[in-house]
Length: 280
Image 1 (tube, rainbow, N blue to C red):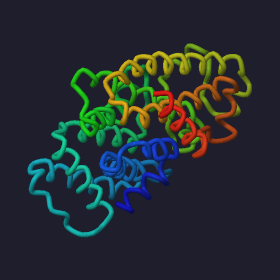
Image 2: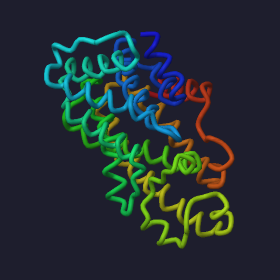
Image 3: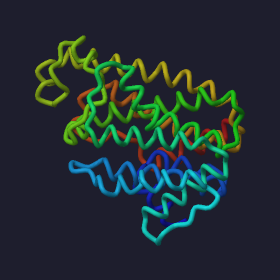
Image 4: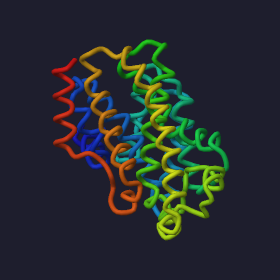
């Protein structure tokens, strides 16, 4: 599990340190899920995507999902290891293989550098890249079916904060997840730093809209906490607190996203988690 742990630790400060509050068995399964998601995302999340490695995953998954119980890695490569991990998760927790299909479809949108004209277009991407991850977590945490819509909304909210936080980084990759309609509404030609510096009030209004969406979606997602047992809720709540903190920091100064990567530190997350443990 050391490989999965390292992938998780290097890939996400918030998720990794929040996951420390899960029981070990749950944490190990979360590591397996995240290893697949992170490595595949890394294949496509480059100025020059590793298309061949991504195509390999897509091809092997098409074969693997036909017989999940009979999946056998071809070698000890990282690609085969993460495939084995996602096959285990889908099979062990009776997940819908279509969730993996949806995730890979969203990753293909990144390879294609798809443009998003409307919010519905953006939400199509978010479904595969984040909402289905919420559904996987429901299965791993053994939550009731009634929690599904809230888990999907949690994935949506967190992904949206990532979009907001990573605007400058995504531009460097030739991407922008915010719909054309939003930029036109506020009279912005683009979200390039030079452009927004010329139009600070327009950019502020644009960011206010995005942060309002996040707040509304997170408020819906918060209703799902009631379905999570106390022993598991601390980890989820810690991650949520971390994302709320990020949103608050960006709200104070939207231009901060062009200055540094806004995310909570390890100590901050651990202390929040401990506080939640005591409070709950």
